[in-house]
Length: 169
Picture (cartoon, helix red, strand yellow):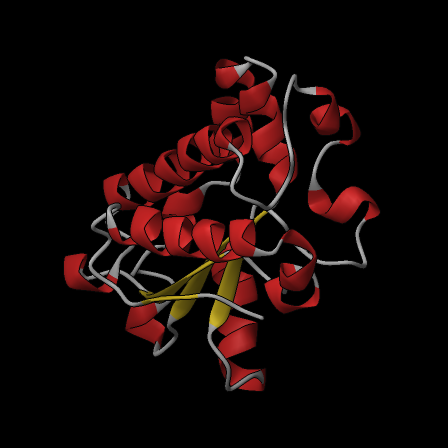
């Protein structure tokens, strides 16, 4: 599937391929089903999106790690029962949420490192994104918003992916 799709994209599109990971995967980890989450991620066959099928064909990739996806998705890409975690507040300076987000981010980044996906490893990923569309809610959290954004930035940098990280507001 991937080789054919990437070839078509290369001929039709000038923008990089975007790899997105929804919070639904995060919810599998939060639910303490890490084997299910890993199996799901494994079935994505990320190896087929490697430099053989992207970089060597002149395509780059952007890794977009949510876990928030966008307003157009039900519950913003999270699994609906995610809000039932004891003490959780989503997308703010909340330790329960930050712990789960960091676990999710580490899983995705480690998997991409293993596949040698990042540009310094010869892979197609030239840029990574953490968080998404935060500007529409940041004022509602006050100082906790600033703390959270600073934490997100530092947590992303601590992954040592070797590519620049961005956030979208």
